[in-house]
Picture 1: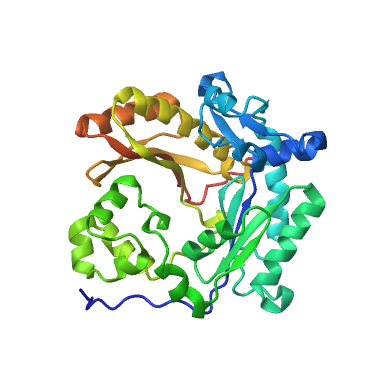
Picture 2: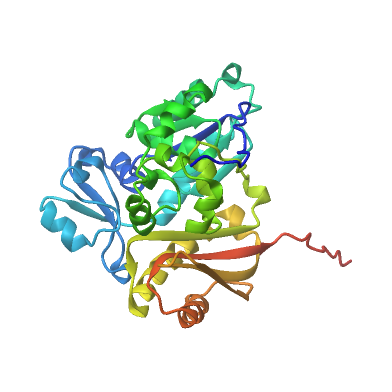
Length: 360
């Protein structure tokens, strides 16, 4: 099948860098305690997070330890593992230092979390405008100043830059040039496309779709019929096309955290546990000084069911509270009792100018 749809074009003038810290929380702890450098280390959530591994270093990963794994399972896999408590204030402080380095090269920085960000360096004059050299300098500066490593991906859009940052992890970088995009994406697993989880992958596999090249053979109308609006994104992403802008913090209208699950959440109790975990992540993101100065307008919850249909529920509120999100979850769960494959929490900010009164 071939498509009559006129696809978007790759913007060859854009230069995007995605920087992703290597096992960030664990690396920060090891930088502070160098004697741990050759030992398996994991940073685990507190007891109210049900003893879940937040992150671990690469030595621990060799034993099969992963993020979001119960601590008790991690201990069985790696009896010598050293668990350290989460210290978010420490990680936020280090993250701010990293972002100062980013802003030496561009003011257009979009934080994704404490340990990763997109940088639009399209108009940056540093390093003669070469984003590959910029990325190398940024990683070098982070290590020299903070003794932690970062990986980076460089491409003409966010989708490819993020993929590229995974290519030479840890402590590496990868450049996808514009004339290399077609070759890069064609053998790429469809699972690498954001939004494609186990259920979508299974449907694609049933149609013999395993790579982006396989997906390119399908007409846009067929993809929309199969996957709804997501089919529009699939049509472009499988060709390495992504026109999303890097949005600096000054332009942020909302903030959200979401997780797509390998195994669907099949009960309200399972959803509630995940809701709590995501809420704590959102709470930490909002503690960032620049975001905490923004006035919250409303809270929302996003749910994607096993039938790929999405639902968003929102309520006006000037602050976040776990009870608010639990009530929104009840509404979402009452709407459909299908298993849930994606759960997200977020806030909308009030970006209207605030009136300032001078009282003499």
